[in-house]
Picture 1 (tube, helix red, strand yellow):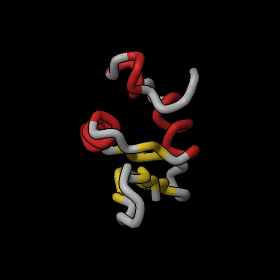
Picture 2 (picture 1 turned 180 degrees about the horizontal axis):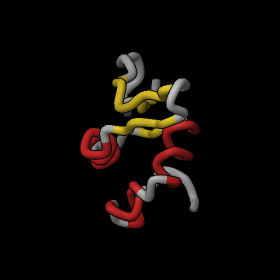
Picture 3 (picture 1 turned 135 degrees about the vertical axis):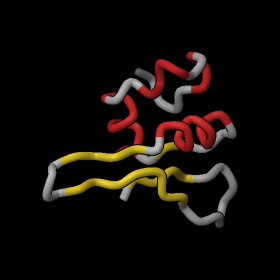
Length: 69
């Protein structure tokens, strides 16, 4: 399961994708990832790495990426 941490403490994680080990594929809800990043959510390390590989961050302004790329 792929999750994003929400900005405020104490809020639950939101599922924005999953990994299928049988097909060895990752499925991501890119619009949901972009929405939460624009609202200030910080991606977990796993979400950041998967999103970077899928070039999700190219759709965000440079100042909104959560980690130095």
